[in-house]
Image 1 (cartoon, rainbow, N blue to C red):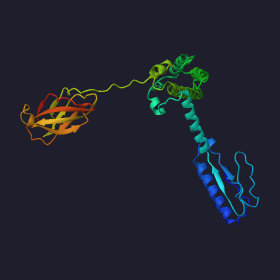
Image 2 (cartoon, rainbow, N blue to C red):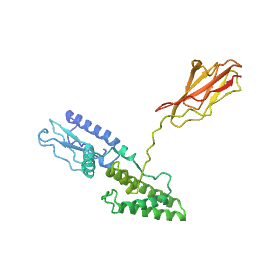
Image 3 (tube, rainbow, N blue to C red):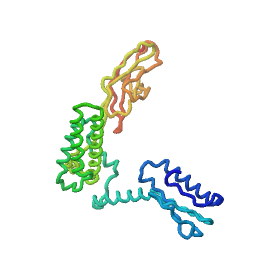
Image 4 (cartoon, one colour):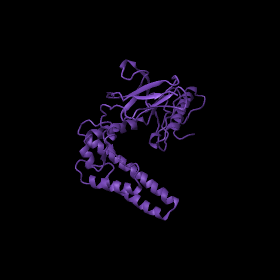
Length: 317
């Protein structure tokens, strides 16, 4: 019988008790199959006093839970779920965030981590050691961050462990390499956690974040009005009735509008929109062999449309 299932001290003839027992066991087995954290595997089957008759409902001792016995005429089982621990943890986190902010609003974790740059990507193990040393020096006695989490002692110990593991790999061996990778992952995790603490205290104050030794992400500057597409070329292809048009791609352009004029490019009413594309090229097909056409391009962006490009001329094969 799986650990934590309700035991039945009653004869199998007691159908009502047996039915309740089966439901209890089925629910517990289903829940235990889904749980991964040991702290979430604590299920209690608790007798509700006063609802179970004849005094037979004594608790049976267990290593980590209480198991209810069932009476002969009435059974009540209360499943006390581990969700209580989850709720308590969430409340404690809120209390902690409120206390360190002095009651001020702290942005959500996702938003906050967009402000700070942890900067571990692409770094070697020794680069991470150097980064950790720099952060430790900036965080030490920093009045803005009086209670680092994790502590600088823990971070320093992880850094020293990685240094030792890197040195051990000089002699070779898979086990030494594995130990180095484990130590590097541990330091990565601690630096990331410390970045979360820094930004939770500093909020959006870039000066405070920089004082901790971490960097601030660069904010993209808004793209203004787009210039006209440059170097528009129109050329025939190796197939009949086709002309290919290409131009230089514009940074910030969402897509491009291609126009064609089959007569005089100076006559504005003769220009017709023939297509839209997100690429910096367009293939015009179905043209009469030997016909001459003019093309121009306009870029479209979030700030509006660009001016029209200079026209380009080509003859279909």
